[in-house]
Image (cartoon, rainbow, N blue to C red; front, side):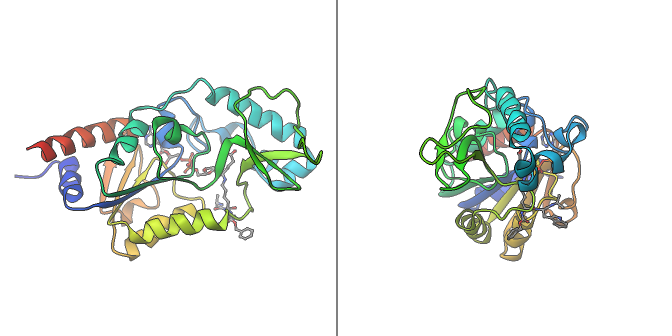
Length: 250
Ligand code: BJW
């Protein structure tokens, strides 16, 4: 009998304890957060170079802040979806489970994920451009644009990694270590083209992990993945979670 593709992944998961997940914008799409590169993606409407680079911020901080304020307004009422919730629940299911996300929307944390690495920062945090101090803000829209640091008066910027900027080395080291030590890595809802995040599944595979990709369409990673489960992340993860829990209870 031919095993259902989702059951093959259940079989794989039943024998492991170290599981990692790399997520991208696709996992939040079902919550209503726009992706970057899809048909209705943000980069189709806005030029990345005009808004998500340090040069853009230097040129016109108010414009960049307006854009982030608008995006925080979009995200503020949004709730985690079934995909985020399944992943939060898997922390209790596996001995060693971590989510590495490229998303800045904070939805994994809101769903309850605790062992979480936010590679590209968080849209709900601001950083002083001079002192580097990071502060959380829930206020949207901000009262003053662009915001300034209350302690030194310098501009504050979104605590987000823009194009051409290095990721926080501690954050990247943590993600790389998780990738090298996991037995299975899920890659969910990412186009897999933005570095260095896109190289993490390859590092995991080189260290012996099996790669399970979930996406509504194939990506550059798909030919290298051990399993490709086509579909929406929330639907696929819910199905997988149900079958996994049934298998564990049997
Ligand atoms: C679903 C779904 C559903 C939809 N279910 N699936 C040339 C060659 C190689 C590299 C470079 C190059 N030129 C520049 C670079 C480096 C650059 C890079 O990689 N660029 C590429 C675009 C080519 N990288 C950087 O600049 C990084 N820094 C760096 O390299 O530093 C080096 C350095 C070292 C030392 C000193 C100085 C520098 C930084 C990258 C930061 C990325 N930041 C962004 C923007 C953040 C700002 C913001 O949010 O406002 O992060 S870019 C944007 O892309 C965002 C995302 O996190 C990231 C990844 O996107 P993601 O998540 O994959 O989203 P999409 O939209 O692309 O894909 C969605 C996917 O979901 C699709 O596949 C859909 O099919 C799928 N999907 N619905 C399941 N329901």
